[in-house]
Length: 574
Ligand code: C2E
Ligand code: MG
Ligand code: MG
Image 1: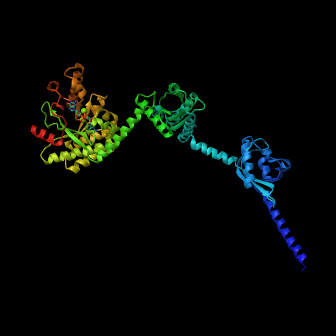
Image 2: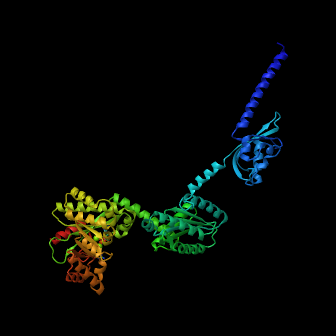
């Protein structure tokens, strides 16, 4: 075969292969769901595919001979296109999101890849752009993003977005040396309305409050809802802290304006706390914490008011935290101990009245602390339950020890409201006394008037069970609370302890003497034993005896003493 024929044959095959590839390419080009635009080296459109027409609205005839700038939207500045051309020149390729405009005028977002095709010498001959419309996807993403960063009920930014905005605002404020404020707003009485009138009304109320806040602040301020009934306002470019105080007052007035919801006239109040950059903190978490703390201070001051953050608030909180940690440790390390104060019969009764167990904390650094220094804190942070359990157990252990030495005395233990609400106190006492081998009748429980009044149903059931077990029940600090006598009458109570505040001045102050007299009379009609607390002088003892009080307790007879010493005191009585 001549060499030429062979060469021609090969040429033909090659040509066929090329044509085949081109046909294939054309078919792909034609049928692709991606829009394709081919421009020449001068940027003039030389071909487009049907998907191009579908997306852009321009037919092939309308597109050919024009430049891709035909599609340009006004959403990118010149530097965007400059960067694109620079990338094409340097790397031969550009890829990214770009906003273009359809023939109808509507802007759309596309994901675009442009490749530069070169000849053998490396000169550009074609620019092939392949793209698809991602507007829809973007819209969905935006919706998702919106949902993730906004509160569904009010449409306000949520905590995450608030924190993000605060972060940026702080960066700006640092750069520009400006001031900003964070205001925490907590609604007063919201829970009562929500529970009382239903969650629908509660939701409507929150939406209305959100709008009222929005209306009062500037457009540039951020209002967020960060919890059930908690809102936050971020204000930038503040000149004076005073601006913020004025706003707070306006907001309180605005929020507490009555509103009409489903035929109910509803009114809520608002309590606010504010913190400022740079005065109170330099990072977002710190500022939020300060504003939150200021809000708690405002609440403590009586609600429907506002407070600026002050350093003392932080000091007090850290002291409290320290004490709380200390107290936890104290329980574990047995730093607590019980002292006992005897009760003395004024008129002779059957059984001797016994002793009251009073807890003390032998603090390694601060010495012996009275319960007033740590019981309120323990109540607040819930540690009282653990502490109370320790006290009960210790009292039972002591009773068993005394019993083994022939000393039979009733021990009264103070029980706080939290212990009543928490778990099965009667069951706990039954188990404890059984464990220590003592009769439950050795124990007396002292409950404050307010604890008895706070958990009426639980208390009624509990006291009945305690009575069945033989445990004596006393109402402590009587006269300081607001007991309903009708209610007290229905409860299985054995003892009333008149608060020291009335006993103290009863021999000098006629009004106090009258109160004491009334309580004693009341006790007698209800067949209760009446105990007078805080007897310090013989005169007080005489007066109370004359008034018919059964039992007295006070420094006149004995201070609270450690177990060993009280044991001697009790033996001396015999
Ligand atoms: P309380 O139950 O009313 O205890 C009587 C308090 O009055 C005791 O103070 C006692 O030391 C004091 N007192 C007794 N006689 C006199 C007196 O003649 N003059 C004066 N000025 N004071 C007298 P204490 O030990 O500081 O206890 C204070 C309160 O702490 C108790 O008041 C009780 O409410 C609470 N508390 C003590 N121990 C416990 C406990 O184990 N658990 C709970 N939950 N609370 C406890
Ligand atoms: Mg007591
Ligand atoms: Mg008392």
